[in-house]
Image 1: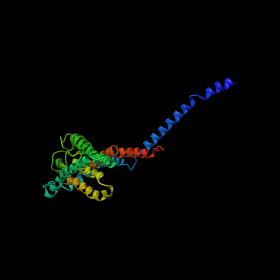
Image 2: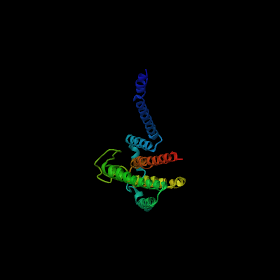
Image 3: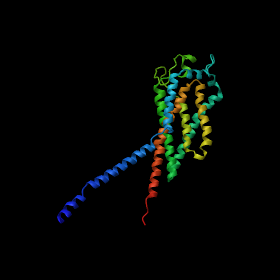
Image 4: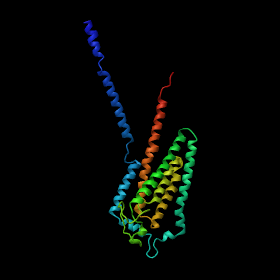
Length: 280
């Protein structure tokens, strides 16, 4: 009995089943935590990426179904014999040129802010540097690559001033239709409207308490700058609004990748350090 009790049952109590169950439970807990984190960070209906993507799809469908909207809006600024008279108004021509000045000043300010942030240490400086890098990448990928490098260069949509309805030779081309009626620097989509949206995105560097006050004139400037292109016969309405939403989608995705997600991880690490008990 003694041998059975000490040898048999004692050996049974050291069975690997217990540790295996514990490991399985730990893995299950980790998997559950990862799923919860994935669900918490998944885009929701109110997420900017979802909103911009929905807007791109809805606006594309609208202009494909009703191309007369483009023609009707452009016709408001066209007069037979005079063409697009707004393009000859000195004040409007000067206003258009301000976009290059604003872009240059923003770039200088952005680079200066980045250099200042890199020269300092601390979480605030790191946050500023991350947002500066985000804006630089957003400018390169949004207005630079997606709008000017891909869409304007490859889609071949003729500008309003070049189509037969407004004194040109080319037929009207709907949105998203690739054509050979324009070889380069074409109408779809608006590069200046994309840059205007980037001006709005630069508000991420403005302190939250001032963002509304600064944002109202910035948004108004971006809208007027974009509308100026329609008045000049340089772009259709669809070129402008799809440029806004496509650029917004690119900016929102980059913001989540470069600003929002790293910020959440940084706060989680800081919280973890504070929760670690100090030795007595």
